Image 1: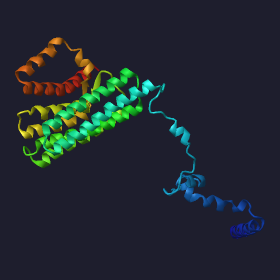
Image 2 (image 1 turned 180 degrees about the vertical axis):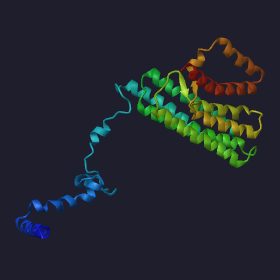
Image 3 (image 1 turned 45 degrees about the vertical axis):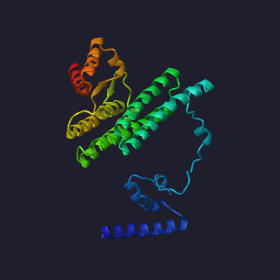
Length: 303
């Protein structure tokens, strides 16, 4: 009886409290309603302000915060002093980059018309202009992020697209079309990966991480130009191997380090080229590709 009377009193108190809360606009007994009202939001770890902040916005609507057009337009393409002389030097450097791009386009057009060896010579000219723009930019003191991005885009067009097209045209008729297409597509894909990785990776003054796209394009262009007397399937395998070498982590020496080699090492390729240029070229390419894994193993042993 005591328990039942106590329970009845509690029920009466709750009912009276709810009526008082309705009349007076809130009481301590009305707090449970607010506590459970936020349960779905708290269960997901979000408050009402956080839910409002992540509500999707229609793409047709403009940004809520104003954009400072003056700040966006104040970033110069040529950092530093903007004199007439520096602007002319900057224009010359970027003209070399655009020349490499246009020569790559001409190589594609010539390859489509069947002039494969002439197209390969245009690719070699692309390599020359690609090296010239960087050297001039450093010499003139007009290196800039804009020039670096321009160079990367031109390399993708000339060495990532034009070089595979020229190689594909040279392989037509000697190997199956799907095999040539897959090998050349690998060159394009690996060139894009190589250039993107180079743009975001820290630079090493001694070695390249993987074969650079310029070197790969030069090897492909010279292979087509001199016409190596090897079976088509061997050429396809070599093209695929060169593509994978571009995205490998093997260290390859830069030209500045190769120049410091003993003179007798430079004399051997010259004599070999006078005897048989094709065989000498093939040996040099194989030696350069093998040097990456050899240096990698040497670094692991000394580490």
